[in-house]
Length: 243
Image 1 (cartoon, rainbow, N blue to C red):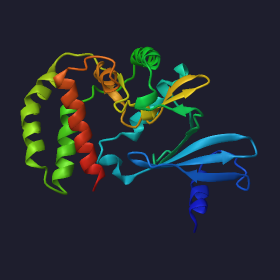
Image 2 (image 1 turned 90 degrees about the horizontal axis):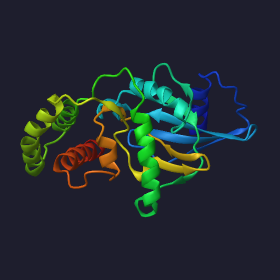
Image 3 (image 1 turned 180 degrees about the horizontal axis):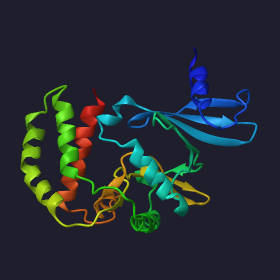
Image 4 (image 1 turned 180 degrees about the vertical axis):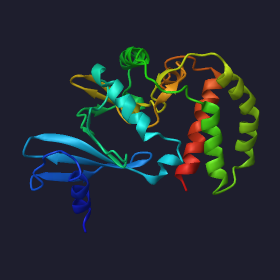
């Protein structure tokens, strides 16, 4: 069975009435924890993204269920891809295709940052019935996952030992959680004719109000704690991804 046949078998599980003789698939660059394909529906002149979730999702502490809740919650403010079909078993997801220009560090202007800050403030006001994100538990799960496969080098181990008391103190503080993307970088931001859109919400959760703003360099550039928090999460993620 070729790859297109496998993809068609997936789509046949949906309630979408595609004319399979009139659609084509293009493999996109793999995301952090999934494989994605562009579906071109030539008959209706529409495009969609088919994302097949990787078995790595659990290693990265991702909740696909929460992702669907979040995408539905932010649907009204039109800043993210709309869900076209969500597999009940959470093995794949079909969303609308966002047509536009992907941002990069080199083409992300001060005006872009100002627009993005307003978008962040907008989605942070949306209340979602999710638990407060536990950054301490998240990082310890990453560390445990890595330890099952390899050894964490001494330099990183010492960083973690030094950082954990600060992180525990931070986690226990009485901060009010808000919706966080948790992977906000220019590659996940698309400029369109209808404004700026944000993709790849799989790491999103109910986190700290400063996290996304700090990720994209909008506040507290010299804040050691948030610099270290984000850098440690990224470093551990890369170690897991390289398995």
